[in-house]
Image (cartoon, rainbow, N blue to C red; front, side, top):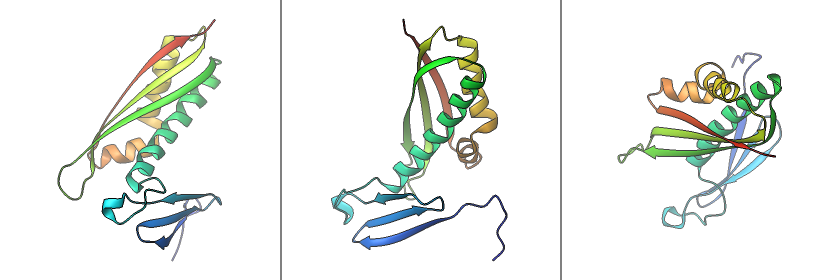
Length: 147
């Protein structure tokens, strides 16, 4: 099988019941497990939670990178994500909202707004991919000024 140089790899190994060990191509591991009513022991994140966290990590990476390049004095940045899923199987995401809480000193609102918009519209591969799959994704932010 031919792989492009910008390909990504992962390996998922079944452990037991509904538990799996995910291993990234970069050498990191994470435990995924199902709830008890689905045969799991609730010992790890759910696969769909991983997908949501991946989106949050992707867009947060972009926002922080853009804010650093624009020389904003960011002390903390948290992305809070809320997702709605379809009632029927497959229970895909239908809507995702990303709320950024950016804390710092003398932050310029225009720069924070621009960073969130650029991530959403141009840079966040996960967000853009999910939108192409029909997921409605919205973003907003709040700025907390520190002394």
